[in-house]
Length: 344
Image (cartoon, rainbow, N blue to C red; front, side, top):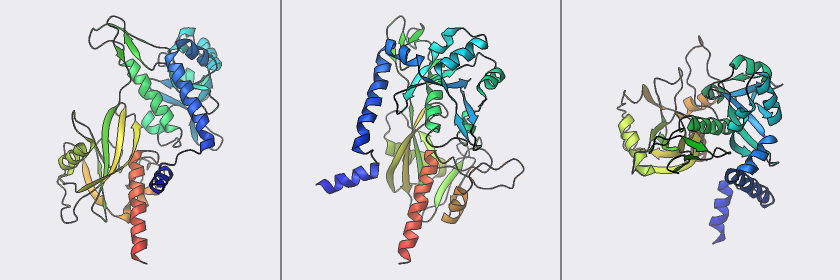
């Protein structure tokens, strides 16, 4: 009875027992800040602030030439705001997004009301569109700025109650808003989206929308309709977009994704019959969809940065920390494993 459990725990890559107490402590600390305004105000005084300007995160270049989100001490941010003519109340608009391993609270703040160039000069960084920043940040940093942007956007678009039309008031952490009239409590919401890598056993299917950068292809994706299960959404989307009927489905993993707003991406693999692979692409949904061989995908995975304007066209994929990239990488590893096994 213990063997399957042991395998499951290994697959999930859970932290070692000696680290669990630290993780539990951090989660309970963050939860306390969400529930206690006074504790959150105190944590803000010594917290780290990630700045945004009209939802674009502030990035700084490191000594190695890479980029990272600028994590500024709360007191330094307060000084910067004062030098740029903002009153002290703006800092209170910061939204809690987590805490470090040392239990230092992390917040995000949008300073879109201030001059962008002036803030960049003060902070020695640049505000970068979130989509572009995803190609500049590491896997550990990207989710942090994605969460920050999603929460800031939610607050900007949820200032009034949908039932009464009256203003809503946020708590100090920014984890909820309450209607000032009816008392209805609103929480940040995510839209479920299925993203699927379809395979016919030897090739995988990728598509692109017209809005994608030139040469970029990704796994198929679509929003769940009301009342649908994950499986139903997946089968419907594949049928609608490329005219294929799915035979089997396996779940991979999930990821929060801030585009177009805040989405919960549910990543899956799906297979279709090798005898029925003729594509009928819905041009209203996709600009193009094609089957790609293992060799083509392996080459595309080596492209680390988007091609520059004027470069010859090349197939490239979503950034490494995107769930689409994870699905493609998983498929590639499985295909290599099968080839190696067949040669034995």
